[in-house]
Image 1 (tube, rainbow, N blue to C red):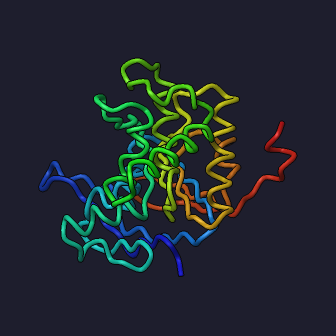
Image 2 (tube, rainbow, N blue to C red; image 1 turned 180 degrees about the vertical axis):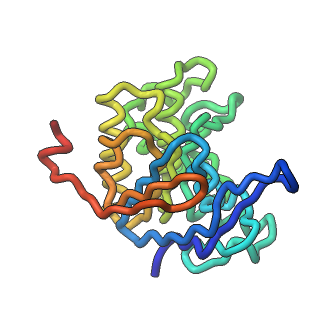
Length: 235
């Protein structure tokens, strides 16, 4: 069963002359173990697609299913539970809680879902180590530059056992070496059985994906199956 299914999804904003067709009948499925890259020009609908996939927005028509659950049929409380348990989301603007340390930001979704504080912190520290910043565990976001903040956001998305990882330009604030390390983490999580959707403008990062979907004006204009050989990814 696919972890994520978008079934004829339409998303429009506004009405009349101001109406914007952000997505126009998109269908997409992502299987366990698969990483799909989404590319396209600004305004093509990439971020809208991620928001719908993560239950942060509702389609105007069509269905979004995560692990077989139709998100459109859930109450707000049920939807929040799905996001905590099943979806890891790397936001383009990080969305860290300023009053919480790095470790507390990463452990927050686990604690909200009932994990003990001690166990949640242990997993958070492991996730921060995975993204290369264990020494920043007790720092607050405002005491970090953009790159470390982005790594905290990535650690939060990857912590725990979430089956769907959504990443909106996750390497935008990182240098090329750290960016490649983050892509390796996303790839490893998918190889371990999660499904991933990556929005990126960088063809090198898209090369880590199994498929690349191209959007323009809210429509899929092309789709290619691609997985770069490991030796190419290391160059």
